[in-house]
Length: 430
Figure 1 (cartoon, rainbow, N blue to C red):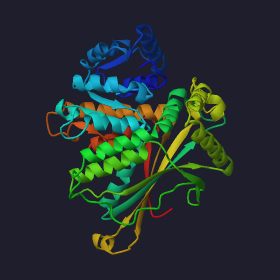
Figure 2 (figure 1 turned 30 degrees about the vertical axis):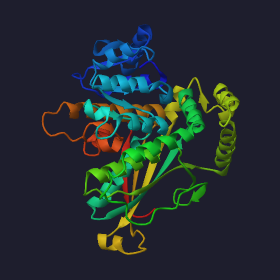
Figure 3 (figure 1 turned 180 degrees about the horizontal axis):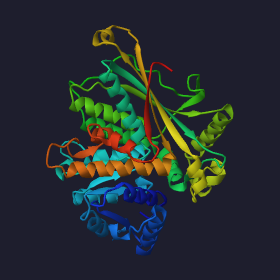
Figure 4 (figure 1 turned 60 degrees about the vertical axis):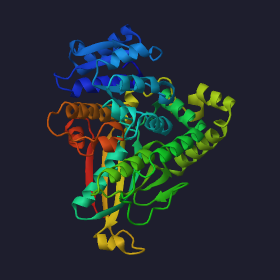
């Protein structure tokens, strides 16, 4: 709870959780935890010290982690990069049958955890707990937004085929900024891309045959975007989004299709927008430098030691200022395409004839919206775990955000909070 993002999450949990929800703040240093709690009290305008239990835990001391998870039902891990620090926390949660959520956007870590502990007979299922990564800005809005769009199409009597997502970030005069931990995860992710291929090969072998009989997306798969293109309807240039969104959405679609014969999976592509050719050129320059330097150990050291230099100040150890956070917001547009009927969808070569556009928008994404996303997910899961009647969540195991939350009231909870997160629906093509 003492890290840059962890402080935001703690404040949001204390703001939105009911008084009957016990909240714990964990870290290595009790004095730092006390300061974070005092800061939260000041910013929330009320003394929250009596509501927070201090838990001393060190990533290098597995016993301390297990003592922490033994006292919790749901743990939110905000310590990254997860490839360096995540696995001991996951293991402690599994040993203590404590459900685990994180805000990781690193596909290698996310899918490695699935390979190690997932599957029908995996440790997560055996120990009756949920292990879910990507429950922050990576990748709640994209995964849940895709599901929301396609399920709305189905409610309208349509057969969904494709959902394309477009992320747009908006900054003020102070510009945008992101904390160093995200940058470090980005560099290490590109440097170890080969590991992800091996992990996916292992998952494919483990899950062979699981999707037998499951529906596949109907209609043509959209052409994969490999470079930049101008999208007139958005008034911006679009580039492929290289984070965890696409892989998590793909895993969600496959898992739900395997679990529910009535579920209609969709093709999906994730993109982000830039407003001008100048911004596009900056991305090209940074991408070219990054692609070259991450190949070499000396290059990675150079990148990691000088984040401000190589990103024009966008990434730093200080992170964004309060003013930058206040001036920043996001929107994610989902363009869904489908068919008027199953007969139309079955026609050879038929292109989707029906379209639905939805938008999720909210405040600064990396810290403010992120803390809202993961806090409401934790509270939703806690309520579901404690239900004595039929639960709305999937079976225990390593799951995606969509698997866990699709049948819950998560999106309604999210919008009921006074946090600026809203979902809009627009009929028709742009």
